[in-house]
Image (cartoon, rainbow, N blue to C red; front, side, top):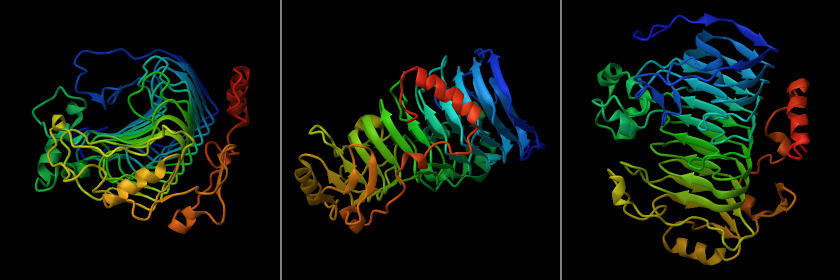
Length: 445
C-alpha cells in the first residue's frame, strides 16, 4: 500500500475455501479517530476490525466459508481491492459489518472496484454495533452485489455511500465524518468549480456504477429506524438497483438519501412495508417497480444545501394497497431550514417526470385527478393492474393488464428468482434452515 502515490502494488491469487472464522474480539475506539469515520462514523477507514481482511489485493476468493460469533466485522476489502469474489458464504452473529468494501477517500485514486459479492446468506449482523450493515460499500465502484439473502439485521441490509458534497465544500474542517480521508491535493488540482456542487465532486465519489440485483431482503431495521433496507447516500453516479425483492419490512424499502443523484431504481418488488416503499430525493430514476401494501408509496424530500435539478423520473410503476389510509405521495415544499442553494419553482414532484404509473387503492381517483391538474401523471391510471393472485403473492401480470398497455415491462416476480441460487452450499444452508425452523419461522418455505 502506497497511500501517497497514485498506485499500489497488490498481492494476488489468494483463495479461502470452506473455512470457519469465529471467536474474534470487537475493535476498540482509539484517540483522534474523529475524521476517519466513514458515513456517520458507522465504521472506520482502513481499520483492522474484521475476521478476514483484504488490503492491497487482487484476484482473490472467499468461497463456502462460515463467519460466526465474531465481535467485529466478518470481511473487509480495504483501499486497493479489485476482482475479489465473495460468494456462497454464511455470515451470521457478528458484532459489526457483514461485508465492507472501503476504498480511498475522495480524490483521483480509484482502486477499490470490480468486486463480486454473490450468493451469500447474511443475518444477525450488527449484534454489538447496531449501525452494522449486512453489506456496506463506501468509496468503491463497479461492483456487483447479487443473489444475497439478507434478514434479521438491526439497521440497513445494503448501503452504497461516499462523502457528501457538503463535507467536500469545507476543506478547512478535519473534524467532520471522513474529512481526514479526503485527498485534497488531488481534488484541488483537477476540480471544475464552474459546475454545481454535486457535479463538480462526482469524479471523486468512487461508489459509482455498482449493480445491486437479485437480492432477497426481509426483516430489516429491527433496532434503528433512520434509513432504509437498501440505502444510497452521497455516492457516485450510475448505481443500479434492479430486481430485488424486499418484503415484511419494519420501515422503509429503498432510499436515495442526501446528496445522491443519477441512481437507477427499476424492476424491484416491495411487499408489505410498514413505512414508505421508497424515499426519493435528488435527481434519480424510479421506473418499472412494484410496491404492494406499503404504508406510503413514495416519500418526497429535499436535502440540506441542495441545488435542485428538474426532471427526476417516476414512471411506469405499480402501487397497490387495500388500505384506505394508503398514501401515494404528498406534494412537498422546499424548507428554509435546509439552506437550499437552489430550490425548485414548484412543489415536489411537480417538476419531476411523473407519468404512466398504475395506482389501485380506495380513493385513488380523486388524488390522481388533482395531480393531473398540476401537469403530471397525465397518462397514469387508477385501475386494477391485473396481478394473478395478490393475496398469495403471485405478482405475474395477466396478458390483458392495463399496466402492460401503458408501458410497464413485466419482470420475473417468483420468490425463487431472488436470493441464493441452487448452487449455495448445502451444509451452510442446513445451518441457516435448521435454526430458522426451530424458531418457528416459515420464511424458508
